[in-house]
Image (cartoon, rainbow, N blue to C red; front, side):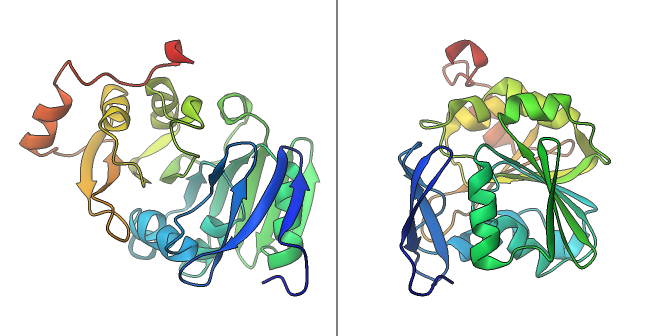
Length: 244
């Protein structure tokens, strides 16, 4: 944690304000997106529930995790607490933010830059952070492994729509293993329809700290009749690149 330092700093995308959430863990409010990175009820608690538990990291020990939006590195930190031998791919627009998080929280034993990628290591785990627009970097980067778990943790669809479209979710599906689990905090019917239209099998899960629900998605499996019927309704339209 930061001691005796300013609660604001400026990155490549503008100013960030550090906020301490309900469980004592930090999050940031982004000036560029006008939104905080996590729930104010608890950044670490939300990350554990939605992503680490949602993707069954402790139980399945996935070899490859993909996270949409590195931010403060909370997803990485909570993952290495329960798993110690995996590759963790993430995306990040703001390179300065990663260095700042490393300085404050010692996320990695070692952090180096190779071309437009930051590579961090901690014991047996390795993080590869793709710098730049995620829609472009995931198409150009040659991943070592298929994704076994996906933390869909982008800023909200209202603030960051390009990472919630049907086309984005098709890209993720094509990069995933047969056993992949995608988990996200979103309960939006349109986001569920975007996933459904991209070929994912969906499951509704209880939300974090009173939120009505969250969403998990799989390459294969059975969807409840109720959810299938709801998402088959043509009145619910998926988010699409054509809207951007």
